[in-house]
Length: 502
Image (tube, rainbow, N blue to C red; front, side, top):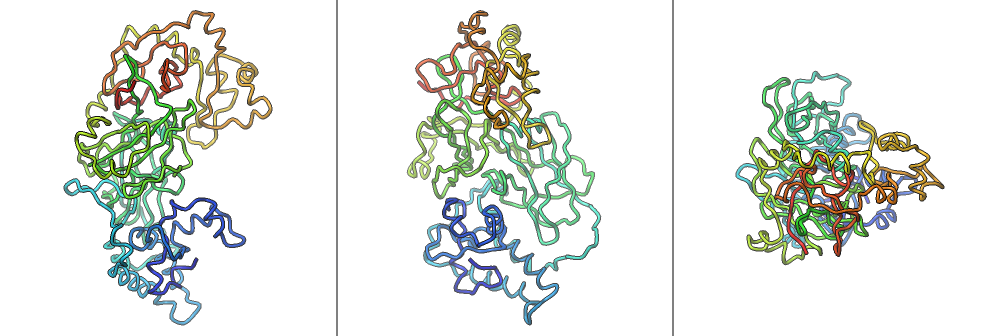
């Protein structure tokens, strides 16, 4: 482990970039004395410290150029007030050594060059942001570390086709503009309502190349944009060029849609893996993004957040993204399958994402015949179970009292229905499923019958029109969660019917 300025030319190819492939136990064994593991991970990811290994999993200085940006800023700050002779010129000299080393790839790296899919002039995603050209431009810019407050002259906006609360509850990611030479990472977004959801806008002082980061914690998700976004003058009209849409993945069995509780989802774009998701299992239908990339499969949990929806591309640089697919598999995809994503295989296991149809579904009316059934069975007061959510604008969970009020029961009765929390009610956390209606009382009230949804399942469905009566949690003889409860899915998000099973 060393700092950027201490690297020698021979050590550049020994810098470990596969941090996501290291277990917490492996990282914990490397933490310097007196430093917390989380702080150690942040310093590695931001480039303040570098991990040297003889057998590296992924060469950092070949792909992860955002770390070099961070290190360049650290060196520039050091050069402001040099403490030793020769430190003042460390920034350009070190960058020149990096660029020189990058022009001479080692034999061990020749087979790991990442595939970058192209969409004309749009390259939508990459797990290794920035390019060598971004690093070369750093040497020509003099960092500004003065106390001068620079006026905000530019802005960047993007749109998500749902409310901010729905994004928090179902995807759990956050957005930021990556830090550059002149500005730190920016994440203080102004939100406003749009026809389809929410517009996020941020103001900047400098019009320099910036990357839109889609993150959980400090880790970028697969939908993070590879190329720099375009900034506009503040107040520009029609400045939204990049957009996303979250969807709920589902499968069909018989005449009903349901949520798998075993297996994997795959977001594929232009026959390239954007993100792999693993379903929790054991009767749970939430899922998490794994560490897999198109180059290396690893289904270990990559992000400390469970999701109920998948964030898809809508528009990038003002152009609709068309060649997207969602795949559902009972078992993890194989290396051979991933390397041979032909039309025949994709047509069998996936659904093509049609953005205009998805957006139309979000505005679909609830079928009149389903109105009375919904009010009886699926309103918050008629739900059998409920998933604890975050308070809007806060990382805190809902309180027992607020949940009880939503469902017309007392906090004491709610706790009685969920005895596992009686010893420690404070252990309740976001994402936990609570029983909110006495099942026996519900059966006595005549809810123990079955029905089909008001509308036959389509490719894209509004949740309200996909619900049906069903007495059990899982559909009979399957591991598919029934859509028989309001809290199972968020009605503001469209449901995508990926494939038929059983």
